[in-house]
Image 1 (spheres, one colour):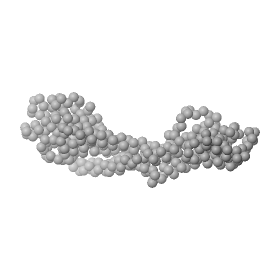
Image 2: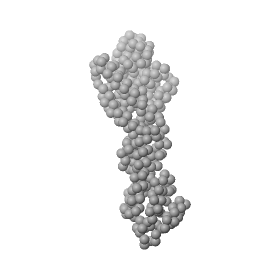
Image 3: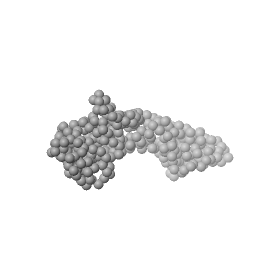
Length: 349
């Protein structure tokens, strides 16, 4: 109210015309435009309301002044969004689109049967490594705090939305909603549209990273699991996250079933999904015997090393086993190393 009074006083000092005089002093218009362009919302509101003093005679001048204010705000928005030092999302839209494209291209390769062809497996490993680098770059961007920049963008888009509402009112139309449509103000700008799209994609990456971190922490806190079980699951989840797949949560009973099978293979000298132990004959029997209460999905077995990375690499190079590791659906893992024998089981809660 104080600002409105001040602006009114300034306009009166500029020889405010009589009610029947449609002329508006240029100095008054310039002052109102200056306040419409101001970053202070109170000054902008004072400028909008002041034009009401002139009544219908001010309509054309008011509309022209609003158009000038809109142009000014649009210019400020463009400059801000294209400032690579201020905009944490600058040129990130190209990377997020590349990540989306590469995920869609490489995931089918992960699910392709190469008949264990070493050259094809190496090609696939290079593809995944390239995707990991791209993903790491975007994760780093996603860790940046954009709140200050987002607030600056919001302030300008709010000013643009105000101008649009005033233009609607000046044309004797009733706005569809009394709320300011700041998103529409951004979408009407190419740079604003890119900003909104990139911000959404970065938010998706932040969500994936948060879910991965939460699962890592939960798995690390599993008192029943040893370091080999945790290390393998961590490695697998990091690679699953490259494709936006749900990270595996380690499950104690499913892991007990897997560990028991690995121990039996070593003790009874066999290597098969079918166990000679009657009550443990199939993976389903072993899961049920371990009192795993959810649905199991698949099983991998490996023999040859105690290293988690060795088991992972062996299964990655074997098509059917890789399909299980990167299946989209399961969210639980049972991992059971015993000596140089490994068994992995997946399930869904």
